[in-house]
Amino acid sequence: MAAGYRVDARRWQVLFDDLILTVGRRFRRPEPRRRVRDFVRGLLAPLPRKNCWTIAEHAGDTGPDGMQDLLTRVTWDDAAVRADVRDFIGKQLGDTEAVLVIDETGDLKKGRHTVGVQRQYSGTAGKIENCQLAVHLVYATENGHAMLDAALYLPKSWCDDPQRRAEAGVPEQVRFATKPQLASRMIEAAVTAGLPCRWVAGDEAYGGDPRLAARLRALRLSYVLAVACSHQVITGLGVYRVDVLASELPASAWQRVSAGRGAKGHRYYDWSFTALPHTTDGHGGHHWLLIRRNRRTGELAFYRCWSPEPAALRTLVMVAGRRWKIEESFQAAKTGLGLDQHQNRRWTSWHRWTTLVILAHAFLAAATADRHRPDPAGLIPLTANELRHLFNVLIIEPTRRHTDALLWSIRRRRHQAQAVTSHYARQALTEP
Image 1 (spheres, one colour):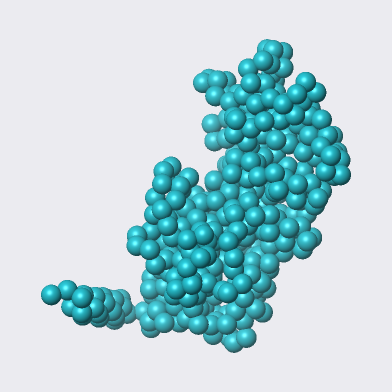
Image 2 (spheres, rainbow, N blue to C red):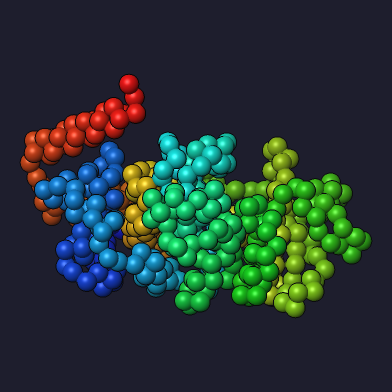
């Protein structure tokens, strides 16, 4: 009966094993290969909190040292593992019309010692907070979407402070780069590796950077990038702010088009697009200004668009709507996979934790890829959260090792006692 409900646990197991086997060649010894498998299974499990302690206990290890070593001391290249994940996603979800979506997300932190942390604006919090920021790249197609790559944003205050860099293990070759520059590097690496894609989408932080747009044109990647209402464009009649152009559009210039399917129906907006003169950068192609109007509130959003070939309004709207897939990826990675639950202060451990989360999310994306006709039982396709639950019940739990809960309780309390003693001893050196 399970087959009639499109639950194929055997296929999930094969997908998971193939992915772990692929990245396993990046490790020289069998112990870290086993720990990578157990680490990712722990990320997929419904643990109340995800860190090296809880993941090690879930794996049946006698202590957290092995999982901590995987993030700190074991020799492996996290960038190479992310490249393996990218190739895996290309095979599972590959689509020549795919959209590369770029955006950043923030993790709130306390103190000043965690790598990259400072008071800065976080879209996650909606205000200035003490946080880390990281730029992420997501691969979005009609059949699914998956996280591909990530780059930690290192503020100038960190780049110009040798002591903080040394304490956090920031490599010597790392220099300050803006978020659009980090996005450009990840996009170029994906395209150079042969990942099939045509479009790039991003919010105002990326649409407002002319160097990123020029680089995308050089790579012959079409784009739909959001811009601010104060953004200026060149028209046949001169230079205008985009909000001024929108206010002068006649009623006939707007079309009602769906930006994609939602849980409660199509996401309908009113759209208008205007062709813009060609730029003189030698890349040719077609430029547009795309405007979205909320049908209920009248709120406007603006996009700069380019393609080497002519594109229809519905195509541009599809790309603009697919940008929201990165928010779904962030939600799944944070609530289900522990993306923001890491306790890593150093450069290497942050990138390794994030890479393993990306690997886990890639498995969920491949396993939930909707390549079939509607379910004969009338069910919606499996979501990432539902598949994660079923994978844990059907695959992980029947095979995982169990350890003595009392021994783990003793180990945790001993570790906490040692930490308290250390904190008080250090305080006694400076306080009367």
